[in-house]
Length: 265
Image (tube, rainbow, N blue to C red; front, side):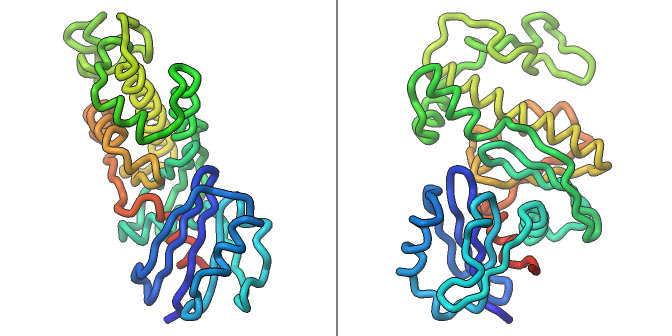
């Protein structure tokens, strides 16, 4: 079997993964840079044991057709998202949700792959709003702040207007993001931003899954690795829509790069 290097050029990071006989033997990640800066760095790496290079993502187009003696295969990102998700969850019916700067939804049904849309809500939404509101643009720093936050200081919750809940929604459901500002601290605002993004992604994923007739959503991408995002989706979305199951991939940052590696040009 071939030893394949898969590269996913994302908006914020570039992800590298090597598969040998469909086993991960190497993974790495760097801050995304223009292709003219990435190529010299790649040339310094020892890829003598690589048989093929597959690239995907927005930065794949300017990548040369041949690099260091290798023919480079350029893989459709939608296909890479679907196949990478299937690599980690060997299932035949799911909606793949790739959480990056924004969020992409891809339907997979018995080998049929279809892009069903997405939402511009994602990691860059959270970072951008944080920078505007309190001058922080480092994700880890914002996440650390959010761990100490209180949603009750920023969000209007259903229990504030319907103490027993309403319909399918429990009383701790969010009625309005940033709809109840009560002397919030930075920590509260940070958690409010995480909640806005998590629910924006989760609710859109739910409706995309319903539209594509799926009962399972599988989330990947760097943003999905956040423990806060995962907890908020589980607590705020999953508890209200039990008919749709939400799962998170392992090695979430490398799912699309992995999908590129196993895709055929």
